Amino acid sequence: PYGSLSDYKNSDYWRDFSNIIEEEAPAGTSLIVTLTQMGTLEDYIIKKAVDVNNVTELIISGPLNLQDLSQIGTMVRLQKLNMLDSSFENGRFYYDFNQNSGLPFLKELILPKELKALDGSFNYLRRLEKVVLPKSIEELFTVFQGCEALHDINLTECENLKRIGVGCFSGCTSLPSTLILPKSIRTIDDCAF
Image (cartoon, rainbow, N blue to C red; front, side):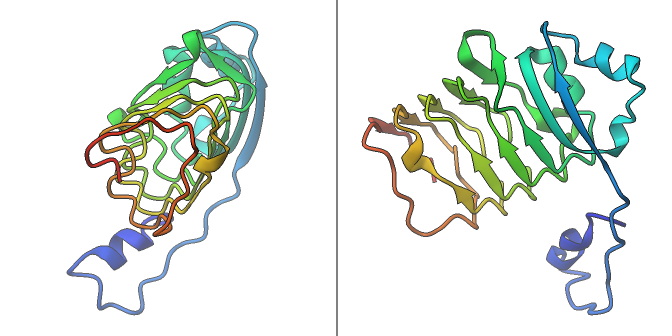
């Protein structure tokens, strides 16, 4: 099935089978949404009759809350998530997309430009390759742990980043061997990398 090839190749049992091929992904839908109130993404999807199982790219702007993030988590084929012009209460983002095996195909993530803190959100998204962090980010806690494919993240532009928390990038085996950190860093917790 689509999206399972790397699982087979990483399996001890299936690794030696050279004839395993992956189905092509069916065409997906790009969705551009502007919300004016928190908690209204589900209403938008119902009103527009959007098939969340077919959304592969989401560009969302406006205020978001946990209810909206939960709705994004139902978009099981989502590959690109752009939240650049979104906002969260107090500039803090905490939502565990893995609680319901959400976002298994996410490859690219653009976070909100006013975001200040990020915690426990995108752990173990094994296909996540690229993350764009905002300049405003001050704290990264356990955020990208186990994101094996993550190789494109530029921390040097995070001029306000003060802390990288425990396990933040632990298990990110595709990160470059040398990362340049911003001068603003004050604390790097145990097992951050």
